[in-house]
Image (cartoon, rainbow, N blue to C red; front, side, top):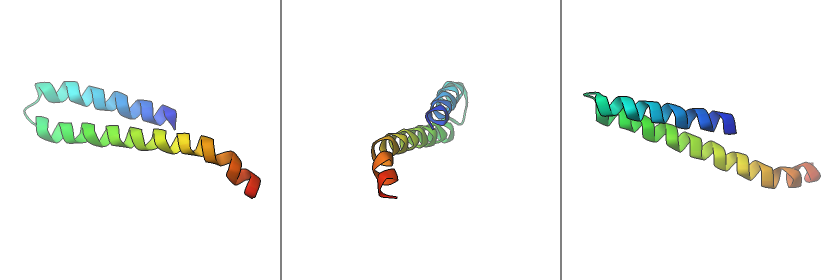
Length: 60
């Protein structure tokens, strides 16, 4: 998941650079915000699974 998050951030950075040169910057920046929030969600989920995963494994 961390690889996917890094890719999402890289795409967001690429779109941000492109949006600054583009006429449609508002729409492009919304895509950037979406990719950043996706990356953050994936990183939080991965961190939670690292903490809670062993407990769940012990219960099952």
